[in-house]
Length: 281
Image (cartoon, rainbow, N blue to C red; front, side):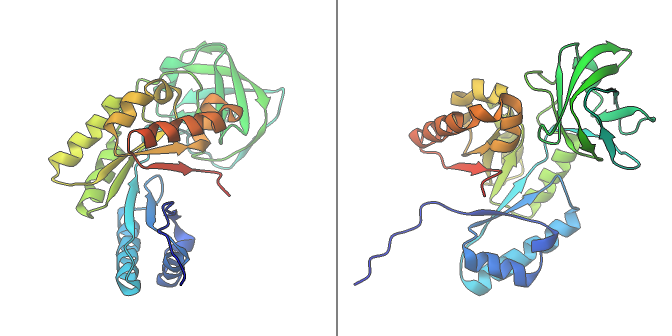
């Protein structure tokens, strides 16, 4: 007689334009998708609602539960709007300015808080660290930077300032709007990006409780501050996520494997599920 065991490791799949049809979602469920992740950095509420309805319809047809996770964008620094992609050449210079648009020879970054924190010597990493700048001087909110590692930069690419605390709320205005929508859709989990402290987790949980929802809080560990406050974050979150992409940019890719193990062990020791995500395959 064949002996079967329950699969303890679950599969989370991020849905996007290429995986939004009934046919594709059905294939994902049959392939083993246990949870559908909706990335609120992209797409509209109407688009997400339509795909969410499809996921639930497919789950009912197949007779297999599929959880829904709403992943909030969080206080992410991003390149502003560029008329066309720009190529930054190693050894040259570029001026980084705060805002959503800039003149020729400038690279806009939003939100504008970046102008308050940049200092000479700071590193600016763009597109998961593929492009690397170093601040040489700052004047009137304009950071004159040397291009250490060049590359092609397009609109809305992610920006990281390793080791630089940002005076930004854990939940932006967009996050609050997205959270209200997600809770109205009765999602199962809400993932909080760029968690820095247990207080960030508690703030989100308070809003979820206030809405009368029972959605679990997923704390994404991708900042150095979160690593320092790991024990408190593990205690307050329902689920932990090792967000390897931004975490690797923040602390260096060589440090990720051991830290990933540490986070997983800490979560399991506290009886909390833990997700490992980004650059998995």
